[in-house]
Image (cartoon, rainbow, N blue to C red; front, side, top):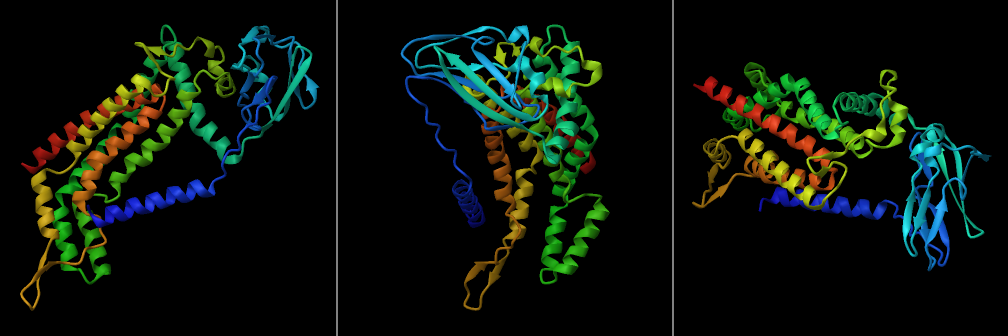
Length: 401
């Protein structure tokens, strides 16, 4: 195996171990026995997120709770009175089990920061829990207003326009919309990548010609890029464009049914009903993670990504020509032969193999651990890019002829 690849893997492993050692480890929660315990998952939230509350029954008998009679909430020490009717229900917690108390209908209460105190009375015993709603910081607020809110409102508009409030069809329409917006820049990126592959022999010649003069080599390379009208950093742009979108989409899909999203709705969508969103799509639960659905999506996305990368890489004959140019043989005085000193530039063959096999495996693994809705977005987007790659390859072949 290539030494540089081994060094990279070693550095990556050391970094992960260091992060695991330096980052604070969560403290285990000690649950009392033979009691009904109220537990808030986080000691603080960022408004308008809704706290998640668990009711754990460690007794030997089942309990039934009336959420309006047995459960109370104080905000900044003021008792909440007359909760919404949809919040009032009965919740049964079997012996030794744990159930979530859904606070979604109280989303308006959590839209402003404050201290929240919860109390649960069962058989004359009271269990307490509390949390703090903090004001979002500058960067979180920027992310929510500039990225999250527009994408969520786009989904809300499409879902409300589709019969049945289909979330799956909305994901497909959002993917196509994003790909159409990025169609021209993505085409330039793929075409630029093909041009870079075509001028690799010229780049190798310049590197060999000005081997001892880095400044001169840099100037000549820039002249070459200018003459050939290529951008050496152009192939990095897809990640810069797609990763923020993927991160936003992940959070939107994961929390699409969260009532806290009412906080982000634009005025013209004030009638949008989050409770009506249909997250089932051809038998796939779009918020589910892993399982058989996750495995099938992961393999499909990984296969499509492999094919797209395969079409984007240079032909095997071109790779062999570059390898021959790199492996210069130097004759020593004693008649023995040895390879030239390795350069600090990445080995193209190793990088191509990593792109062809490593990237699809990484993407497939990520898809498995993402909600199924994100996997569908990735699959549709990859198929779109695959079609673009075929068109770019045909245009590149015509240009060569």
